[in-house]
Image 1 (tube, rainbow, N blue to C red):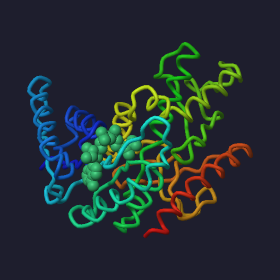
Image 2 (cartoon, rainbow, N blue to C red):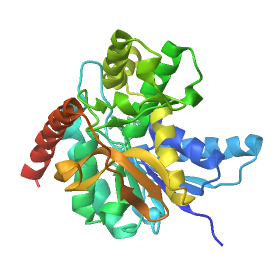
Image 3 (cartoon, rainbow, N blue to C red):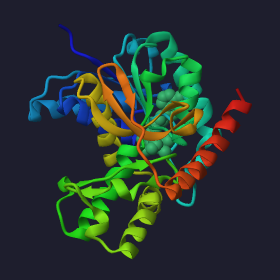
Length: 312
Ligand code: APR
């Protein structure tokens, strides 16, 4: 049997970290793609990462390219093509720049690997993944956006530090769009099954919810560009769930067709990812407050999708 082929579209900060993780876990061979003017950059990064394998002992091949033909038949695509945020920018501010980029990526992917399981990371996430699916015409099971795993990971860290417990014991769920009005659902946040409300005071929880919502911006403010380690790890968890048929329940941006009362929109909800892609959308009970917050988040996502649709 041959190894799986993992295409990484964008060889920048997240793309490089994705390649490192995929190779290290030996999930498959990596094709690290970037535009023609950055072809040598992609090739150099790929070579550095292959040499890394001589020390760590992985045999995955990692190839840099700017030729879409090298992505022929890819099993998984993880897309980070586009520009990241600068301090003061919202994710939505990136739409004009990143829209032509996602269209370029989607039209090429449609030609060379239409059956791939696709994870989009480029922002504004929910609109970019919506446009990718529209251009490729891919089934909704095969196209997801990475946001919820990252937003939940951020919240887990903040809760673990506040409670003085291991991050391993904290589980959280963050729903909605990948923007500042995302919906952390506190009722489902637990420390090994114990609701966080029994361990952490309400004011502290409110502050953690707020910090989670602005978690991406906090890092952009500090670094001058957006985060890349945790985003890459989050996307690889999703790719691994697909490649190894793990059937993990992960909050992911998926195409909603009536679930939670929303239609023709991508938004973060809990889903099961396995060998068939998105195998199930799990509908959880929400409080009236959470429903209102989800509606607000959906409205912001819809307004960006409308911009995208108008220019189609
Ligand atoms: N096809 C392929 N790659 C492209 C294209 C394209 N049409 N246009 C741009 N790129 C490449 C850039 O050349 C760059 O190398 O995408 C790469 C992006 O890398 P970085 O600038 O380092 O950005 P990164 O931090 O990886 O973030 C990428 O993910 O989280 C989001 O908001 C973030 O939208 C941004 C994306």
